[in-house]
Image (cartoon, rainbow, N blue to C red; front, side, top):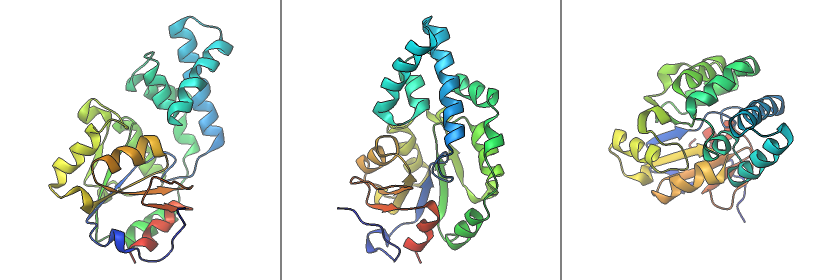
Length: 220
């Protein structure tokens, strides 16, 4: 059984690069935001497939259960693309839910010796707004990797391979931090990267932590 750790872990001794998911990783899941996004995506499914809302909701939830991710459910149903997702995010005013978090800059200060990247399934426009609203300087990250870079989204391996090409380092010198096994942890591990799951527990991840802020303690 995986356990929570708060001390240095030798498995991460050779890490040079930390790559981060953003939504529900750098901030804990916000139920009101998740519900608003879900409702927006269900409306898209209903419109595109000409279904009543209740039938669209059933179809959407069935697909969502495969990934534990609303955006992946919409994409896999073939009723929208990343621009559709961005439109829904704007429609519900997603950024109004994202608040500044002073703990995040403090955490990144402790991790300043590492190279930092982002790999997300959001469009760059949304990522930039989210990181800024969380109170993080965009200069912290060498590159924000989005589906616009590879034409693919997690759990496809392409975004992770793109990261490895950018750094030129062995996979084992990278750790990916995310909150979902299927979308974040599984593809990173397939390429030999170390993995940390936050805000929960995972049997697949190399390490599980109760909050994202605990990542710093792994490397102190």
